Length: 246
Image (tube, rainbow, N blue to C red; front, side):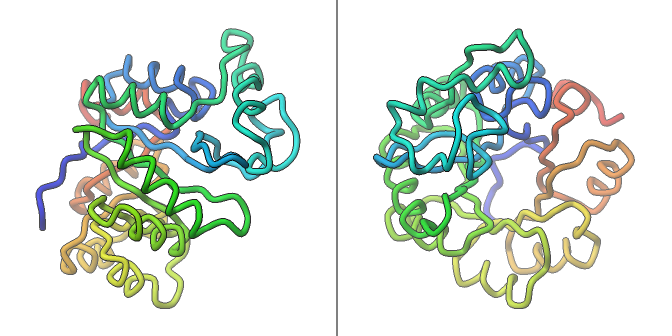
């Protein structure tokens, strides 16, 4: 397998649940806990600007309403994406991918960038994210991942040189073959799916095996014993490169 630039621990959505997810504040807090690799979700505004948000809709994590991808960036950028979490983060804005890229590249932080298209925009989002990453990303390790094969196909069209990973919540028929056809360098599964046989199968095909989202020390030890290549975690204050595995 090709050399792997990511550390074992990858901070989920910036800082797990300790800060408002997918915000610059979360990335800063995750970095303060010693993390050098992060995971986040990216989608497109109605006018084609990539920004960080997990859900299709705005209600859970912002003061906005409705489908996020139907709003222009000028409107999205004015929303409060921190107050839902706690008063300390009130006023924290939605993060643009441009801001996250600047932070990660300036600090040499690796990024697992999950392409999270709004409904019915899989390939268009993948294409646009590939273009934006080529324009903004410099130097630091990066991985484009998605549950949506069409999004990865779109990213491959516009940025074929960028490494890709297929995300799996179930082992659906043909998923391993799909990862191969997309020339993925990694497969990232729900940790409940990962066992010795699957890890060995992924490695035998020359790909890296990663899992999400692991917050339990006993499970983390099991995965490390399997030879797992990366663990996405919410427990950024428990698992980090600064700390031994509990």
